[in-house]
Amino acid sequence: GGVEQGGTMSSAAAQADPMWYDREIRFDVKFDQLELRRGEVLIDSMRSIEDTKGNNGENGELRVTNLRLLWISTTNLKTNLSIGYNAVVNINIRTANSRSRGNSQALYVLTKFNGSRFEFIFTNLVRDSPRLFTTVQAVFRAYDTSKLYRELKLRGAVIAQKELIQLPEEQIFNKISGIWNLSADQGNLGTFFFTNVRVVWHANLAENFNVSIPYIQIKTIRIRDSKFGPALVIDTSPRSGSYVLGFRVDPSEKLSVVHKEIKALYDTYFSNPIFGVSFTVQDSAPGIQDLKVPMQQDDVEIVDTAESSHDALAAYYADSSKLPDREPEFNAYLGLAVEPLKEGVTIQQLWSVL
Image (cartoon, rainbow, N blue to C red):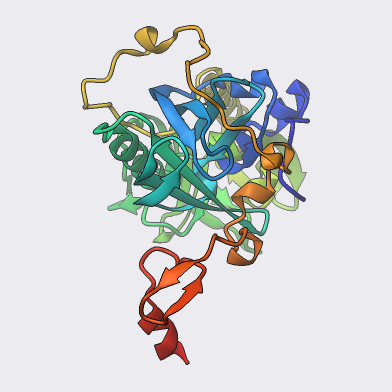
């Protein structure tokens, strides 16, 4: 449990769990975890972005990939964030108080990971630059609407008139009939589809009895004995429920051919994974090659406070009970000095709750 801090995962473990990049929130990771993994694409990179909640007043670079948001401090590369889109609950634009810009529009990213809610606030220190908002929101939407590339789906709307409903970047390599799903005692006769991103099986007599298994969620593919004779067995990752799915191939001579074909497609996929997040930056953003410039120390005064050595996680908790008290200010309605209310909340609304 707990949030990974300092990136303790070894490269061997990262291989064993290749999907943490879009699944987890990590603070202050090692440099190798800031690098893009295979299949991860840098969509946009923006400088002069402040991490207003955790490092208020500190300038940094925000990198938007197809799997996560990366924020890296300009003054200290060890101060960074990796926010996987799968942990994101909501993204919106609200007013935030930035030490560098005062009250200004900021990107609020609400997340949930390992049972805790974290809120991140990013403010663009360059005025009149909407790209921070438009790019992040559009890329997250593209991620959120392409889950079939990355997540196992049981009984989904994936088959129509006995044909696979193809995803935008999907190519079907083979359709194989005579495949028995061994999940029930008697087995169900159905059909396999092998594509460049997943294996799909559906029952011939009921299209909605199906399973879509992305290669990214497959742990092993092997031939094993079953009570129905030799079977093709697909073990899925713990993240997708650790399913053990058995299939019998008719005629049985085809079994080794089917096994070799799916194994070859699986290996090919991992040489360059397709995560299905398609997005092009419109706002005449520079090309990725132009963005790859060495980090420089910007001429920005960093205000040092006693909080600078505080626990990295504590700054981002979204629970109001964990937030520091705000400085009181005079409220004309009450005629008293009170802590300022959160944006969008009025004294009248609080009274009406009572």
